[in-house]
Image (cartoon, rainbow over all chains, first blue to last red; front, side, top):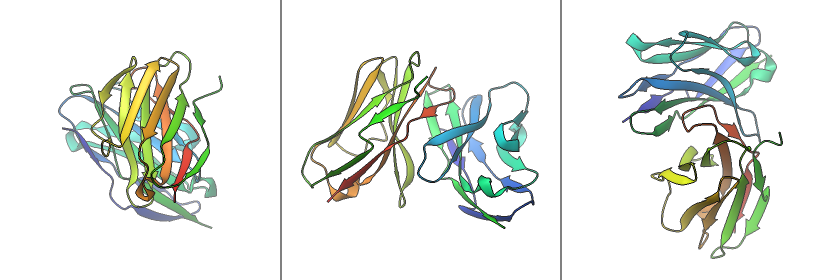
Length: 113
Length: 113
């Protein structure tokens, strides 16, 4: 069965400094991986996705993530945090083998001016 | 495109009453998902459909919850009888293929008193 681990449920970063959100997954088969962002009182919005093409994936709003199969990781990064990045971020894995989706518990990001 | 449409946006009901939440997916999408989000439990996948057929309902909390998708453009999530612990925001999402990026609706905020 697949699972997703997001450490650090709350992350504080200063505006202008890098953002790093860690995601590790387990999957029986070659997965697709996603990062979603949820702003307050909104639904989730796709940031980026990995589907077995390039391992470095660029998304919206300056975010990117790198798929590392050997480390079973899909960490999300952004070089310089902006106040508008304050939100909750979810890592998701879809497993083709058993038609299952798994969500991480989310990272709540606070950006300090 | 109007996006995923959910109704009602807010629902307040008394314990023991039946509640029906509605979702209209994006036209052409063949997968539909229901989620529940609370502060305590975070985001939970309740059930998802592919081509109107329920594929994974392992997240449905108990028999009081039921979901249907009678056609490609409509789904309902019903709670009968409702309880205060069902208070949450319920999201519907759709995608083209169950393992692809999902588009979320604005959510229904349910309060059971």
